[in-house]
Length: 210
Ligand code: T5A
Ligand code: NA
Image (cartoon, helix red, strand yellow):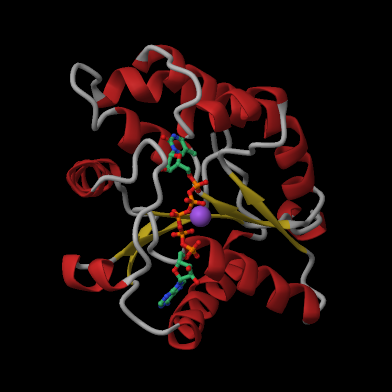
């Protein structure tokens, strides 16, 4: 087959879920593991608060500035488009990308607001690289209440998070894998590692979709 000559690409794996479900902890942990085992991998997170749009997003989340819901949504999306050329290049050169939140947080959080619908929210995300797998971290209410208290960022409110969780369930497709996040860090790490290794294996010679 012609495919046999191609260089294997990296996998694009996204971690999604509600606030405090342990995504960042697990994403960093698996990237460290992969690199220790000579599997080139990079941690990426959205919103990326270090760029110019990211600074606006940070001010918005910390309630230092106000934006209309639509404007806020488009800035979160622009923040992803800023990274798109680098991400696509890295993946095609063989680096696995472990991405902490992506377009789906953009849609699930914005569409949890009054008057914002899912299809409008998806529009600016069209054309971005499509993940090979989305790991959806879920915590039941009881487990969530045991995690450290919400801070005072804009979306850290229980009722809002409930709507976000419903939206994730509305937008998921067959590339999503449900993860019960009500486990200690080590046990959750074992679950994540199996899924990530399997995704890397099966994505190597598949074209990266949009
Ligand atoms: N947003 C984001 C949008 O509205 N639109 C968008 O397009 C995007 C991309 C900021 C906000 O922006 C919204 C979504 C968010 O509201 P963020 O910066 O990713 O997004 O949010 P953070 O506050 O950094 O992260 P989270 O609150 O989502 O937390 P994580 O990453 O799920 O959890 P983590 O790993 O940081 O852990 C949280 C705490 O729990 C402990 C940790 O030590 C930590 O204290 N913990 C565990 N405790 C028990 N058991 C485990 N297994 C644990 N794992 C971690
Ligand atoms: Na996080």
